[in-house]
Length: 290
Length: 130
Image 1 (cartoon, chains in turn purple, red):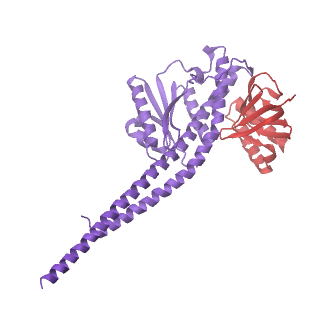
Image 2 (image 1 turned 90 degrees about the horizontal axis):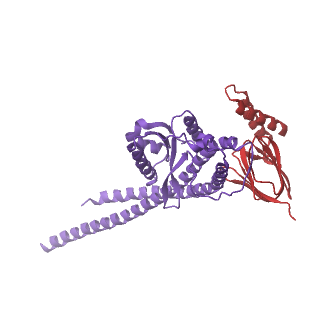
């Protein structure tokens, strides 16, 4: 059994760890509220954008000549995956969940004999992927300096993706991120952004629009913006998820530390009592022998 | 009979402005300014740098935008834009900053005609504000 002194030290160290995790939990909770708010505020924009594009692409007359961002290159040999993770650790399964989702997708693509390219956003994803998929990673971006997800950063990523697309470097682009459902649940998502996946969510009307200038021009202007918007949405969802995940992870850690302190305290008290009892026995048996 | 419709301006970060009692909106559409009144036919267009003028019961409001998309449907006008400022809230230094940025952009040599045109537009609009 560990000595009394050792136990005392361990209790102290667990307690200080508990203080740290508690503080982190509080910070995450405060940040979560902000991140959640901005994620919710950002939703109307991407929804509206989606709607307009839906309406537009329904109205488009000439599918053959539709912009490539919408219809694709007609090939799907090279896949580009944008894996969006956080820059900081200690957030539970947040990053691992995205990576897991991404890895299973990678395996599927490679099995089909297609080519894979990866862009990682956020340093944690890069750390986890570079060992296995190191040579596939074409770019690694992280926005450590920016405090909150902002549109400017998303636009940068979007422009880069489009540049690569126009240079013919890939055919299909998918982004990976965590969708924020609530504090304990984040759902890793794979969303295809090039070519645009238009299935489902149809509240498109049959109404015909007047276009100025014509559809093609509007579309070719709108689609790149939509990509940045989708990436921005992913970033917002991700930052809310990250804080939520960190909060629940730290909450668990705090609770576990508390349990550990209780257990150690009981052990400490027991061994202290045992020591006292031993001393008493020694004194009594000493007195008896006289 | 009311001649009013709803306008909603959203930027990526948030819903910027929602107004229910708007009687006329003038937007700087790509092929010239376009005034929108109630019961306009559905239209989609995009914006060039310019001023959005909103007139409602409570008076006139002007907003400076650099880009965006407008959609009008069922007497709902949605404006999606990434850069928007209320002209009334813009002070001189903010205007100067934007102007400087735009001028720098316009003076770049390696940009293509379209972005050159857009940058020139920005400069022009910002100058008229001063």
